[in-house]
Structures are given as C-alpha cells and as structure tokens.
Length: 222
Image 1 (tube, rainbow, N blue to C red):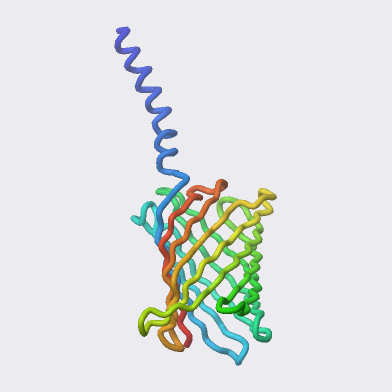
Image 2 (image 1 turned 90 degrees about the vertical axis):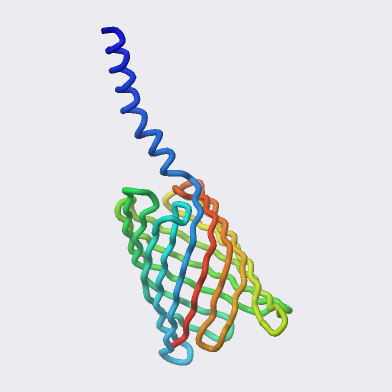
C-alpha cells in the first residue's frame, strides 16, 4: 500500500514537471537556420521602383519552416546617395512546434550609400511598426552599417561585404538585438544579383534569440 502511494506521488510529480522540462528544451534560446530571400524590382520611373518581397526561413536546426514572409513596397531614389523605401510585410512564424504567430509590419527605411576610396559604405535607418497576434504590437528602430569591397578571382568579379545591425525596441526601452553578417555578392548581369552570407544574431529578449544563419538573397530586376 505504501509503495502504491509512493508510486502515485512519483507519477504526479512527473506529470507536473515533465511539460516544464520539455518546454524548456523545445523553446531553446539558440537555433541554426537557413534564410532565403527573393526580391523583384520593377521600374516605375527612372528613380522609382516597385518592389516585391518573398522570404522562407528554415529553423529548428534547419529541419522545419519557421518563418514565411511576403510583402511589397516602393523604392525612391533622391540623387546619387539617398534612397527611401516604405513597404509592407505579412509574416507567419512557427519558431516552435505548436506556436503560431501572425504579424503585419509597416516599415520605412532610409539608406545613405556612398563611395569611400575603394570601399562603398551604406547606412540604413529603418523604423518598423509591428502588429502582432499573439504577442502585442511594438515599434522598433534598426540601424545597419555595411561596407562593401570589390574583389576579383581570376575572371570572376565579386563584392565582399560585412555589416552590423542593431535593434532598439520601445516595448523594452532597450537595444535588444544585434546582427553581424559577412558574405559575397555577385552581379551576374543587369537583371540578377545574388548574395551568400553568414549571419550571427544575439538577442536576450526572444526565443530563439541567438542564431547561426546561412542566407541567400536573389535580387531580380524586371
């Protein structure tokens, strides 16, 4: 009888604690992901492009689709160096099994891009309004500084780039995220440019927040 009671107590503790343990394991702070982006640019005038965006991100150690995005916007060029881009994104994420988040995002980006010796420097300032369900709405500011340098391997011309991006979130009143990336860019012709890069993200407020990412970007000009 005593053994039966002990067994029942042990079973009760296991049932109560196991979901917590499992939840902690499945909602890990770190992940390895693959990001794939496609961008279509359709000229409207000499200084204005209509842009379509599509994104697929594979996570949970590159085993499941965890982030799908589709959006559209415009790119306005002002002179040689300044570009303004308002755009909209619809996002669906499944970072963990059984977790589904839907988001509509309104963005406004301003990018200053200029030559500096043999390098090209770009500084993007982005404000985004995030309308999320569940999770609540939020507003973030993002600043990304990128440096490009042309290289030549035999007859192949490439651009090598490195960038760092920081995120400020007014929900926390803090700088919540940092992304460092480095990679290569290849312009195949006037219509197609591809990027291949590695990205490291550190974020102590999100799960998963610390990411190792291999990414590709296809920019197609129609």
